[in-house]
Length: 427
Ligand code: S3P
Image 1 (spheres, rainbow, N blue to C red):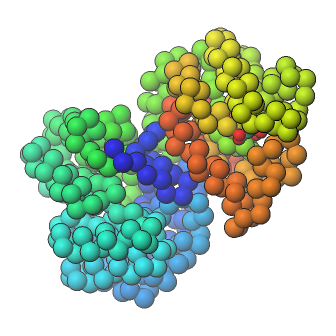
Image 2: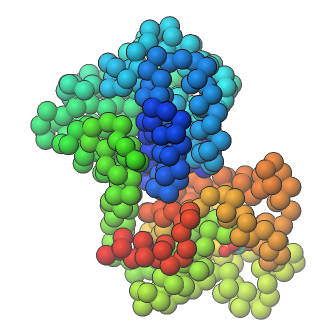
Image 3: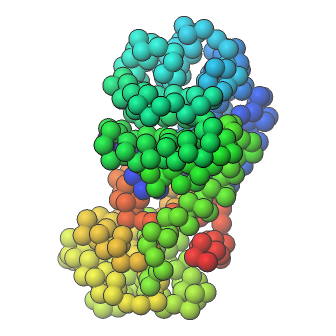
C-alpha cells in the first residue's frame, strides 16, 4: 500500500488519524471551532465549505480558506464541499464544483481535497492531474445515506476510485441493521489484506455504525472522523472520547505492559513524563541518554564529537536490548531511537510503546540552545526558524508511528496532565 505523509501526519500507518470537521456557517463560528480543535487532540481538520457557502462562492470561500490556513498551524487541512446528495448542504452544478476545487488546488491553501466520485470521472481525472504538481492530495469519496450496498458494489467503487488515481479513498455507507456494520468491517479487512493500493477510510454511519468509527483502524481504516464542537455526519462521537477508546484498543494489543517505552522527538517531554509516570505506577525509571552518559562517563555531545553518530546509535541499540528485558520499568528513549529498524522491532514487541506528540515549535522552543543535543545545534537557520528541526522530525514520523501502539498529545498540557491521561488509559 502506498502510504503518504502530509505535514506532521502520516496516512496508512500507525493508528488511524482523527479528522475533525468544522462546519460553521460564518467566520466567527469557524474561528471558534478552530480554536477548540487545537485543544481536542485531533490529527487534522476538514473544512466543510458547503456549510459556510452552500452556493460555493469562490471569492468568499478562498478568503475563508486563507484565514483557516493561518489559524491551523501544523495539522493538515482537508477541503470538502459536500453536495446535498451526499449528505451536505452544497447545491452547485458539476462544472461549478470542479471549478471551485480547481481554485482550491491552485491556491495551495489546502493540503487535501475531497472529491465525490459521483461528480464524474472526467472532471476528477483532470483535477487529480492538477493536484500532483501543486502538492495537494486527493481523497475520492463515495457516500450512501440510504443503505450499505452489496459488497461487490462497494469493492467496485473502491477499485474505480483507485483507478482514477486517488491518494486515499473513502466509503461511507448507512447500515440498516447490525449485520451491515459487520459486513462493512469485514469488507475493510479484505480491502486491507487484498484490494487497497492506497490508504482508505471505511465508515458505517449512524448510531448503529459507531463501532466502525472507534474500531475501524483495527480493520485497516486510515482515518476516522470525530466531532469537535459539532458533528458533521450521523454517528460521529466527540474527539476526546474517540482518542481515548482508540488508545485503549491500541494499547490492549500489547497486553499488560511489563515495561513502557516513551518515544518521540527531542523536546516532547519524554524524560519529565517518564519520571512522573514511573513514580505514579510504582515502576522504575530509566532514561536512555542519562544511562549512556553514565556508562560512557562523558556527555552525549562529546560522544557525537569524538566518536560520531554511528557509534552513539550502536550504544543506543545495545542499551535498548538490555532495557527491554527489565520488568516494571518506564523507559524514556532518545529521540533518534526509531532511526534503526532493529530498534523499532524491539519497541513494538517488548512492551507498551507510547508516542508523545507535540507541535514542532513548542518542541523546538524547549531544546533550542541546548548544547548537549548535537542534532539541534545548527538546525535553527532554515525557514520559519526551525526548518531543519522540522525536517528531521518529519523524516522520522512514520517510524514513530510504526513503533508505537498509542499516541498521546502533549500540546498545551503539563507533564502531570499527560501522565494522568496515560494512567487512565492503562486502567
Ligand atoms: C537524539 C535525541 C536525544 C539524544 C541525542 C540524539 C535524536 O535525545 O539521544 O542527542 O537523534 O533525536 P532526546 O530526544 O531525549 O533529546
